[in-house]
Length: 107
Length: 119
Image 1 (spheres, helix red, strand yellow):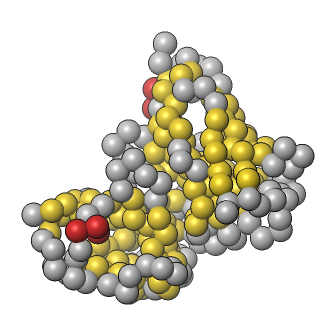
Image 2 (cartoon, chains in turn brown, green):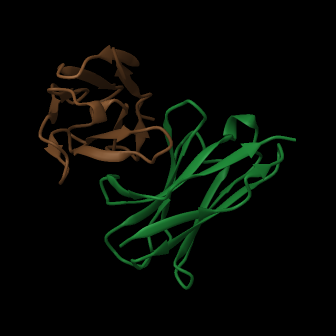
């Protein structure tokens, strides 16, 4: 199994802030890493695929990067009220598995 | 417009079998591009991929659930199904059906259905 570890598990931020969430894989997953946003009571929404590709329709303030085959980041610039949600990473190199989630709350 | 809709019992007794069906409309489940999968989310917890199936019937399961899971496909009804045996309270979750590509990128989800395991 590929284990995915996200940090932080939660954070408080203000509108306009820059937020960075990290995701670490237990083994090399190349660039097979996706990011999702989930709001309460809703299904997740794909934001970033293959580590750094912005999904169609997703605002450009969202970006993803690959530091190595095991370390990835999601960055949200100029945080907006609608961005307060929980974010999940997902590896798709060996079947699929998700990180534990990172909840972005209003400070 | 693609739509996925989960259906099945909302309550299952411990040690019994959880069975859910996902009805697909707006696309053929027999297409060769996409996979059809199940993902669950325990209350207040994160997402867990359960498994997926291709139109050919080839299926892939999470190693942690593989011994208890069967996913099947019924092209004539444009549906696919999940069976999870020997359930415990730990299997209480919202179960989502979903469509994903070969890279497991999920762009279409069902609304989710809550299944509680309780006596």
